Image (tube, rainbow, N blue to C red; front, side, top):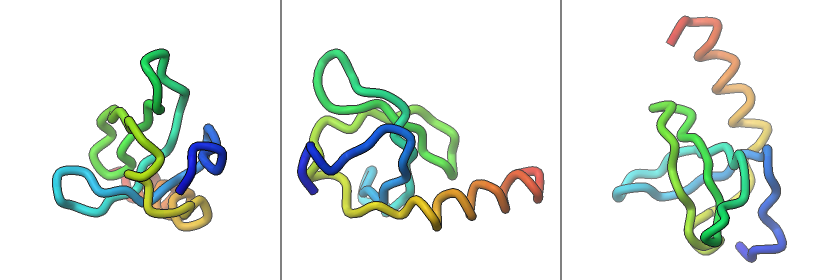
Amino acid sequence: MTKSEVKTGRYYATKISDKMTIVKIEAGSSRGGWTGRNIFTNRTVRIKSATKLRGDVTARGKRIEQDMKELGI
C-alpha cells in the first residue's frame, strides 16, 4: 500500500509480531505514520509505514468488531 491510500477510520490487515491481525487506523502520528488499535487485543499500535499494511478490510473489520461486542469479548 502507499501512504495516499491509507485513510483514518478504516480497517487494515497488518502483520504485527509475525501474526496477521486487523487494525483500525485512528489518527496520524506527529512522528510520521499512524496510530491505530488492534481490534482483537484492543491495544494501541503504531504503524510506521504504509508498507506494513496489507490491504483495506473495512467491511470485515466492522463486522468482527460488532460480533465481538455482541458476545461481550
